[in-house]
Amino acid sequence: MKIYASRVRDIEEKEYEDIFSMLDSSRRDKIHRMKNKAERNRSIMAGLLLRYAFLGEGYTTQDWQKVQIEQEKYGKPILKGYDGLHYSLSHSGDWVLCGMDSEPIGVDIQQMRPYRMELAARFYHENEYQRLCAITDEEDRCSQFYQMWAAKESYAKLTGRGIGGGIDRYVTEENYGRITDRETLVSAFMKIYHTISNHIVSVSSYQDEFTQQIMMITDNELRNME
Image (cartoon, rainbow, N blue to C red; front, side, top):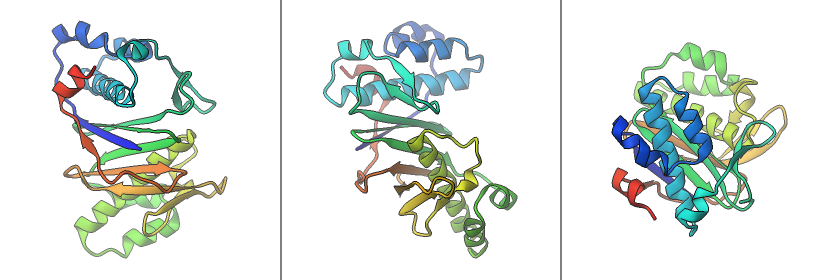
């Protein structure tokens, strides 16, 4: 398992031609339809980070140019023809995140911002809401709120089922070691990272083996990876 993170930067239109040649075709099509520049920047950086992670597995730029992204039954993106290579992408604030593994993986990053407990009451399981209510330190409660949210998002990406059915169905253990879908009873292991300032990162996997670090990748490294 490898987890990569890179800071989103403002990309000038004059750079698009060179950068687009590094992206997979489905992402290029998606970006062309985007009207919001900030969204385009995040999507471009996510695509570059995915390319970096792919090449980091020992594949060549020629292999990458042939990559096709397809969707599984519930919409989870996969690398066509690479059954032993799984990935997951996320972005929040000024950061994009990519997880790569030989087994299914789900990653999520959440920027910690002011929150409302009403959201926890509405979207979290009752046990999780009560855990939050029991925390008296506001900073700790904010961190726990986003740890739960990131955990649910990463699990949803792992399974491919998304959050359309409600994230209260995904229930975290108090120590954040496991998370379970209370409807299907399918459980997964998870790990929380506090590596990036003011952000929470969660990784979910069916295997209880996690990397201990998140690799920070610069823009130059993304552009020059061969």
